[in-house]
Image (cartoon, rainbow, N blue to C red):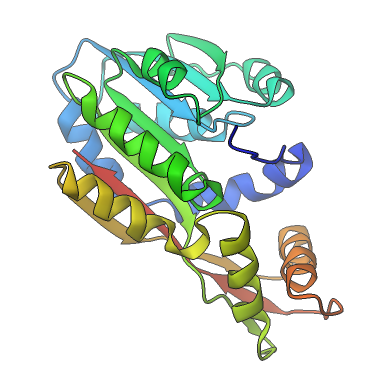
Length: 246
């Protein structure tokens, strides 16, 4: 078992607009170019949660000229979040189905990824343990033909705040590494993919947070992970990275 936590749907809803704004338009454009001549595209969304990537990327691909029929498979271990995702219709997607899969189960993972044209995941890699991430790369690398892979909004560490609070970013990053790959995730997965012959591109996609409920919620978790009392913040930059492999 991966041991992944179940995420609060209210937190996911708070972060969704900022996530959508932060994503790499360049990497999305490269993905769209790959799909330009397809009649059908099967997209498998790992760690799909309540469907944020579906709501963003289905429409974004249309905007970038991908006319293909989009068939989405949303994969998560949290059935309640998957039910929420299905409750929100997405016009750009021809069909949406769900699968409850433990990402540590390589056989189940291989089955759900079979026939995928695109594999996506948002805010996923940093919460994976190293062996699970390694297994994911190995399964992806056995697929024939190989899909395009787009992992986005992976935390990359070193958040800064106004006012500055010394030591908190380092403590938070250490806490992230204690529960998964944390800030090392994009580099770890990029190196593993490259070792299996993938071509990998990366872009920085930071959150830039002004005063808002999202900043308040993020700061609460940031300080708590560092074991210090919450302090009011006026702004924060939270580094993330997007990765495209083909």
